[in-house]
Length: 118
Figure 1: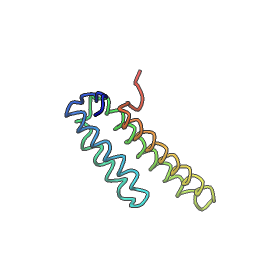
Figure 2 (figure 1 turned 120 degrees about the vertical axis):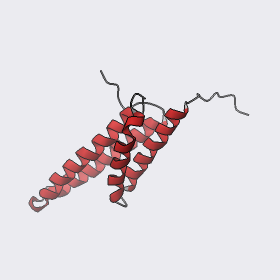
Figure 3 (figure 1 turned 135 degrees about the horizontal axis):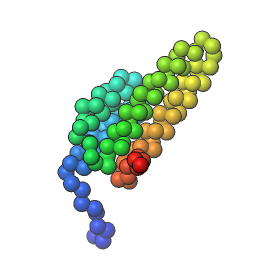
Figure 4 (figure 1 turned 180 degrees about the vertical axis):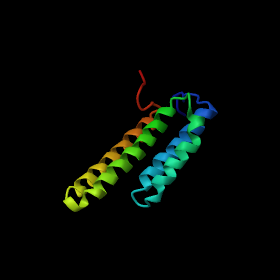
């Protein structure tokens, strides 16, 4: 028997966390199956209104920004492959995306927003 008390979570927050977890999983899976990154952004935009107003909304913004900035840097990396620096840009982009997935997923697991808006 455990004496710890679990915090009570409303069903809407629980559902929002499940969607956000799915998106982090899809983003992570994109390193094996790249189309998962596109599926993740689609889920983000489809479920965006359901997350509005909750602390989970910051994770949705974090994931959307990860996608668009990752895509932008990947584009620059591909364009500059011929100059030789593209490999470094692509590797840096991959590391940055992994960092953002890990940081976000860990924060979500701890029931923390990604950042606080001023």
